[in-house]
Length: 120
Picture 1 (cartoon, rainbow, N blue to C red):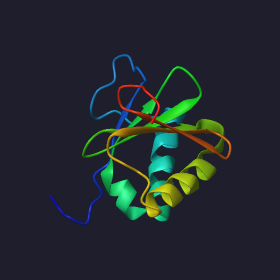
Picture 2: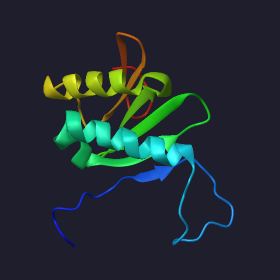
Picture 3: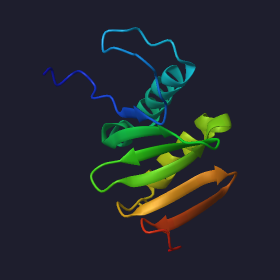
């Protein structure tokens, strides 16, 4: 494998009936996931290299999972650029731990909780 090629994250949370591995996907959510990855790569190459999964939930949240410990970040799909900017600032400040869930869907407020669900 060429080390210059990016390792793309898994995109989950969507079903595609009868899709084969060689089919061209034209789903807008797949394009949105790739745009999110690209935006994160521009803002924080370190974070994008740790991004392992982009999940589309049933609500309006976009869930990003980071390796190595499965850190979960919830972003508002309607304002993804702001969410990525805030996430990168939090990571730059050293506040991101590998055992937490960060919910950035509520404007300037960040909700942090343990992986098990209890607030930190």
